[in-house]
Length: 308
Image 1 (cartoon, rainbow, N blue to C red):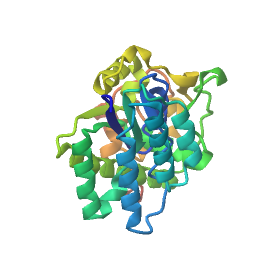
Image 2 (image 1 turned 180 degrees about the vertical axis):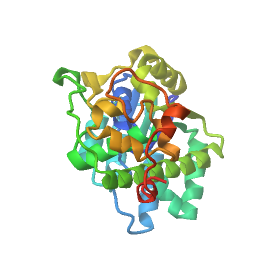
Image 3 (image 1 turned 30 degrees about the horizontal axis):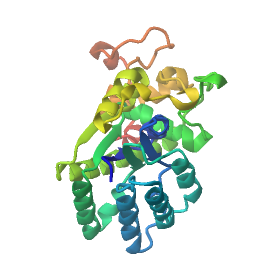
């Protein structure tokens, strides 16, 4: 087998993982198999764990010595999938060839943590195959939860084709109770990803920490880091399809009831995620200040309970 570099992208909810995988899949040296080939399945039996691990082991050992071996490996990978994503896997593999260097997927892997033996086998597999781990997170938890909220409530994704205009979503009111549910879920997603990342750091797997904000505002340098990590030429990364952010990044530009929304977080840990005052009219951004903070009407205990 020629020199290959297996990888996995660990991700949190609404962190830009699909966008990153599209850029990886567009690289001529990366075989990025999508969508989330081992995640979309109910955990009904212990065999689910074995099936996941078997599929990962197959993916991370591509047979690249000959076209015959490659075709056999691809058939084995497709037949090993019991996760209801056959079409997505086939389409991904149609873009791959045996001359590629990096082979991987995006996955949560947290479901494997429910079984001690599966956890042990995952650690051993990652160590044995020398899997390169990328962990994608997001620094701003409120914006992350807002993206999750928009996906649930309005079916809005974070990115759209640049040809469609990008950043054209209208401001809308946010229901605080529904938002609290989205915030709890992205917080739990982050905690689970922390556990998986810590597990894999424990076997000395190479780990590259990435942030959504780096991809959004410094894409070229961030993709260069990823290229070096995966051992591929970073100049060949392409933003496939010209995707751009579909919703405003400024909270006040995205939320019609921004003042109410903002005040609900005063005095909570998420206050740091706001870079504009609650009474802003979406003018010039301004940092929080103690005198300004004291001028706010204190939110009710019931309001705070949703977000703490």
